[in-house]
Length: 148
Image (cartoon, rainbow, N blue to C red; front, side, top):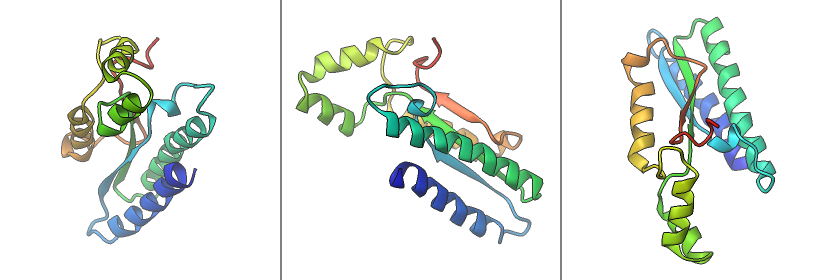
């Protein structure tokens, strides 16, 4: 809870304070959540709660910024499984890495886990002026994991 939810709360709070000093006030805050904030997992209750909290906190903050006329957009990104050293190390510690990757691939309708660039491109889109009308939304980048 401290890292996943309190950290996002404190970071967002400080970002709003900094962006309010812009003339005129403006900016884009992008909070990283997870598919665990959208789907349940009986083994990850605290993670589900904290990531779901990021989702709703982001929406609430987006409404606050909009109603206050701050010109600050606030959105969240919900990644699926992304092939990172953390995932690879976890698989190595708990069995065969290749078998684990194949099992993760099978969880995604698109047929494979994501890569870090998949998330980075979503961040770039939400941060850009092309998303100037996007606030209070969640961008799910999960290869279809949460779709069924």
